[in-house]
Length: 492
View 1: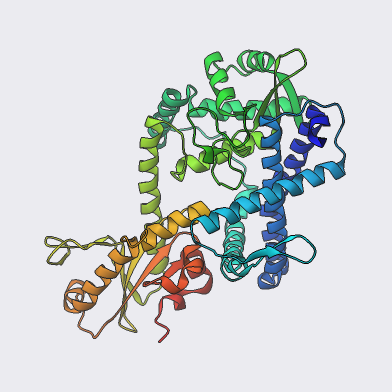
View 2: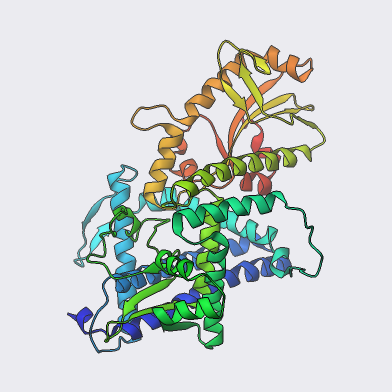
């Protein structure tokens, strides 16, 4: 009953302004947190506080985004302005919806089996073993990783681009790549990638000109402004609005035609119809005219999110030409990660690190009866006679239960099937049984100990949720950099 009485535009503007403050807080933390640690130290002492604050920020941001998505898809038609108490209540309800969706997936995919029952108070009680024993340690490790990243990138927060220098007139490889990206987006989305950037920045500038963090504008008026003032092609502006708008639909949990329903479920990550990806809310006024509402920070944030998903190879629903690019970017990120690990190991003067991937096959660097694949990094500790076989995985950490399930199936195998770890175990066993060939390849005469690890570019939940089932250790590179080379040595 309450929902039918609520006035739509006031609630929408209030929520988007709240979201704008949360976007600001998230970005501000990337400067404030490393500044505090670099000035005052005590990283370990601050981690608990940072983790708790970040958890609250993430939960509030998610509930706010999802509530905005809900009212965009199911706009109320009342006349009563929601109070802050009303909005708080709606946010709590949305938070619970996302939590129960998360829990439902955990049970459905057999990742967790909590005890659920009715408490004396009449409320539903859910045991928290899975969250406290598995997800909490992963979440804390993720916080450490993020803080390390903030500190490493702290200097870049103050860089100012210098456009005064004459650029080389010769076309660079980056120019060629951008032409391919532009062409792919124009073919699949109807707007080039560079014009997407210009589209988002132009929407940002319109908020600045209007001296408000959130503005509303008729769709036709926005099209005219972007064409006349910002010199964007009209057909690309229309395509940009289409790809960056959330609009009314018959059912909140039913995706528009052509899309999977997972693209609207609030407990899923990397959704097509997330406010993190689509920063414009498209609705109608009393006259039936199309109105667009957006916030200036989220306009830039959505553009950055698109860039992140694209170059990490994670963008879904892109189209045929964009999908081809993603494979190229994923392969490149994998090579870049391997090289980062190699360069880091090379800083130790006691190590011999092979510069290239070592092929184990009938015609490979190490001759074998069949193809066992490549050793991403083969390294030798000349002091302790330890040889490492490191499998480098440029990972994108799972951020919800469905992604965690896919990640675990990838490493461990699905329902008795073979996972990646089994292949690496087979390679490790061959290496362990052919130490003479390793010594000949390295040109050493020593009694070596072989140690194999999977090295991931990020902290991943599989290491925590399925720790007891891992036949080969998984180490996150951020942890290795923080704690040092000791992590690579056998503990027994």
